[in-house]
Length: 120
Image (tube, rainbow, N blue to C red; front, side):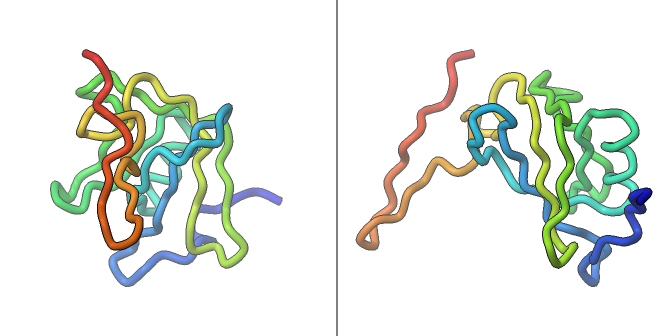
């Protein structure tokens, strides 16, 4: 069956959450938003493209930073309202220069940063 980006369930703003996961290690690297056009561009080019809500523009991961995300596999969840992007990540995925955006652990009501920024 041919995939159609319009078959996904987008929110009222026309967006769907996209989770980026390292295709080899399984580590969850980040979450961002995509619209139907970003989904189509990602599948067409193999370069992960998100929709920036703050800039209201397409955002090709790594276009300015060089921290590119290359698509390995595109998965759709059972409700078709979230996508999983299994990727090859070049450099850090997070804008804080960390490998993952999920570097803060909450335990016993306390926050603990468990990942330092990557060396430049």
